[in-house]
Amino acid sequence: MSDQQKFETRLVHGAIRADKHAGPAGTPIVQASTFAYQTAAEIENVFAGRAPGFTYSRISNPTIDELEQRINSLEEGLGTVACSSGMAAITSTFLTLASAGDEIITSQGLFSGTWNLLKETLKRFGIETHFVDACNLAEIEGAINDKTRLIFVESIGNPKLDVPDLEAISKIAKAHGIVFAVDSTITSPFLLQSKNFGANLCLHSTTKLMNGHGNALGGSVTDLGNFEWNSPRYPHLKTYAERFRQFAFLAFFRKQVHQNTGDCLSPMNAFLTLTGLESLAVRQTWQCQSAQKIAEHFKDNPNIICLRYPGLQDHPNYDVVQKQFAGVGASVLTLELRDKKTCFEFIDALRIIKNATNLGDARTLAIHPASTFSRELSPEDKIKNGVTEGLIRFSIGLEHPDDLINDIETALLKISTT
Ligand SMILES: Cc1ncc(COP(=O)(O)O)c(C=O)c1O
Image (cartoon, rainbow, N blue to C red; front, side):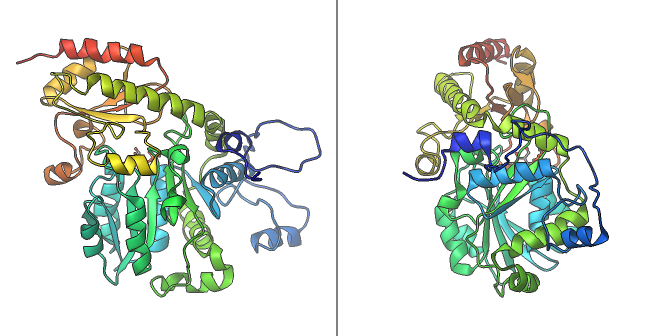
């Protein structure tokens, strides 16, 4: 029998500690910004990396460290860094791999925050981005050139719900010696082991499913241990590759970006995320089953122009869903109604489902992307991003699906037909 514990066990226990002393069964919050040492030599050794230890929570902290080890165990990675939010983890990954003059290839189905980061913020610093259809392999390959430093996709695009074929993209990335990173926020390691499909880095907004209770922002990046960092495509990593070998990305990320920009997670948020993580498998199983039931119930409803859910056979990437997520369609679905006015009438008529942004929450949430988180996108970019004026996104929570079906059905009856 394998020594590897099952996923659900690792969710709750994380790294096994050989601690002989009695103590808290769960992870305590070490709510400290700084750590004191007996001698100057001791703290020097920790700063120099010659001895383990914590010096300052912007660099690391025992509670944050426990979360990093827990996520790393779930992703079966080489190492994980936790950040203050999903956007922080994404930004620091981009800044670790790309410099002025470099290029990134990403999906048109991308979350609008990441889209704006690339198109507006990083562009000002000389990093160019190609937005391609991530389900079109020829488009991805056609965008590659000598300046490409990263191919970055979401496991399920938010809110487009496109599902790129990770294995196929990873082969292209590998053939060109380019890092392939997957934002697995909508799937979590419960639905997707990105390493098995060739990803080199896996990112999460832990704010979403991993926390699961809407009470703490957070993000993470995991090096999946399958990229050779001593590569001419990444000359800035050369000295790190010589010194830290396979840990070059993680060392550069921590030392040159994470601790310099201060995108650190707070110990309290690490604690809340660890608490949420313990129930991830149970929550996500229920949420995905409910989403499937709701999608099947409403797929032919005459008031809905289009219902999109990766677990339905008519989803354009249904085959990839079977392969990558063992046929489970996740807990997010979208509805297309006639226009913005109809969407607002519908949302205002919901009684149980909350009108809020966020995903993977214990409560079911509905939102109109075009007027909220995607509102900064230009009209052309909204079209590429799959955001129309009639689109509503649902994140299915832990309520009973029958109550959610009732709520949606009642609200649909209240929308005007003219
Ligand atoms: C797929 C995806 N990645 C990243 C983020 C950003 O995460 P955070 O809000 O934790 O910064 C989001 C937020 O909605 C998201 O949906």
